[in-house]
Image 1 (cartoon, rainbow, N blue to C red):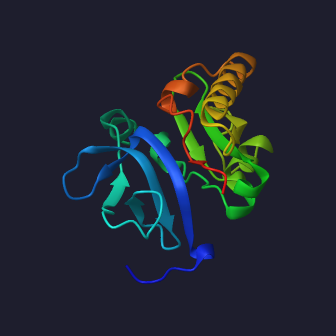
Image 2: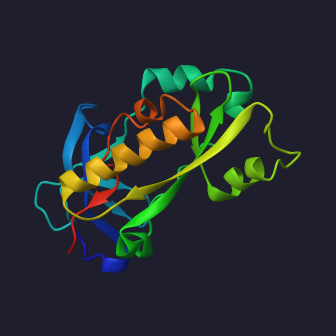
Length: 180
């Protein structure tokens, strides 16, 4: 593979298997992966590995069914990905819009989240509530998983948004990166 500057690739990210599938075989991928500046995702922790294969996001059939529902498909689903500065800080904030009367979660941008927080007339704030949570990115992998699980469970209880952990596929190490 051609040389890629360090600031153009996120390396040593980890997935436990419900996030990505191989583009060629459509089989779920578990392990280290890296993400390029253009959004492409590949197996193995670095682009220098000889056996990298392209990965694509795994989309659960339940998520596809949800997107066919009325207003739910009008809310932009655009999760924020951690930046190099977030990895340096070791954590970042994730933003969600949650349907008040159903366990429907939409991960979104801070801008969209702020519309619901401020009760912007262009949002459906009466039908959906806004929730944010801190997400640990670096550290010892078992501690990161435990921290993210505990924070998610705390938010579920405090905000009465049960099912957030299920929406996150209980992937407590999503976006995890080994400290370099």
